[in-house]
Image (cartoon, one colour):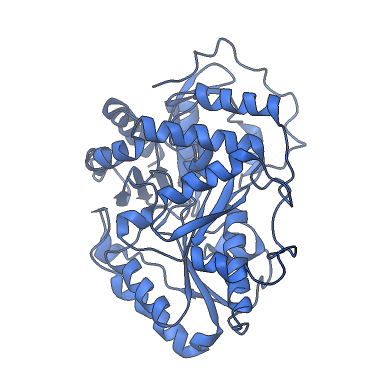
Length: 448
C-alpha cells in the first residue's frame, strides 16, 4: 500500500489537559491516564511515547484506506496552495462538481444529486430538512412527522438526536423536536445470537411502520431514517428482508426513506454503499467519514433526481433552498475526497472488503468461547462483541477494555457500553486480522 514513511519522532506530551472538554469522552478518567496519539501510518497509530497500536477501529469508522496516505496529503497540500477557500453560496470551484459527480456515480441508479456538508451529523439534519422541504414545495406541508428507530444513531444535531434512539445521547437535552416517533430496534439476542451477516429473524419488525402510519396518518409523515447497519450502538445488521419491507411500506404511503450510511458508506460492507448490498434504493443516502478517509471533515446527502427537481421552480435568480454551511464543499475536503475515491478504485478496496468478509467473520467468531462473551455479530468488515457487564455497573467493562487495549496490548478499538466494536481499515491483511483477534482475546480475559 502507498503509505507515508515511518514517523521519526513523537510529539511532546501536552503539559495541560484541562482546557479541552473532550467530546463523547470520560474526561476525568482520560486525564488521569491519557491515550495520546502523535502519528499514524498504514494499519497503525503511533503514541506520544512511540508505541505502535494496530488500528481495529479505522479511527472512528473513517480511515477505510488506512492511515498516512501520501496521495491524499499531497492533494490537500496542492489545493491549499492553489485555492484555500471558496464560498459555497453563489460561487463554486471545479473540484466540488467533480466530486459530486463521482459520488453520484457510485450511488444506486436514480440518486443523481449531492448536497455537501461537513459531518455525519450535518448530513442527517440536512436530509431531514430536505424531506420536510420537499413535501412542502409539493403542497404536502402537513407531512412534518419524522420516524427514527430505537438504538439508531444519526449524529448530534437536534434533528439527528431527535430521530436517534440511543438513550444517553438524548436524556440530557429535553424534549428535542416534536412530532418524532421510533420503530423498534432490530436486535433480539435469543433469535440472532452469533450471527454472521444478516440475521434470519426480524424482517417483520418493519411492519411496525404500518402501525405508526395507522396511528398518525400517512399524510403527516415526511420520512423514515434508518442505518442499514446500526454501528454506534454496537453493530446491529439489518435482518434479511427488513430494508426491502421498509421500502415497500414507505413507497405505498408516499413517505421518504433515508439510509444513514455515514458508517456503511465507502466499502465497510463490501460495496460503495450498503444500499447496493441489500438491493434497496432509498430516496436519500447520507455519507461522511470514509468519503475523505478521515483526512478532512466532509459529509453530504445523495438524493433522487426528482427530489432535486421539485425545488427547481420559480424565478431562476431566486435561491431554491435556504440551507447550507460556510464550509460546504470546502476545497481541501473535496481534494481529499477525490484522492480517496482514486485509492478505493485503484486498489479495489470495496471488492477487497467483500472478499475478506467470511475470513474476518470466522476469526471474530473464534472468540465466542472466551469468558463473558454474550454474543458476536459480524457483517462486512465489522463486528460487535457483547461482554457481560462488570459488577461495578454497565459500561465499566467496556471502558476497562478500551484502556486495557491501549495501554497493555497496543490495540485501538471502539466500545459502545459493554460491546467491543471491531472495524479495521479495508487494507487489513489476514495476518493482521489474526493479530487483532489475539489482542482482543487478551483484553477480554484481562477484564473478565
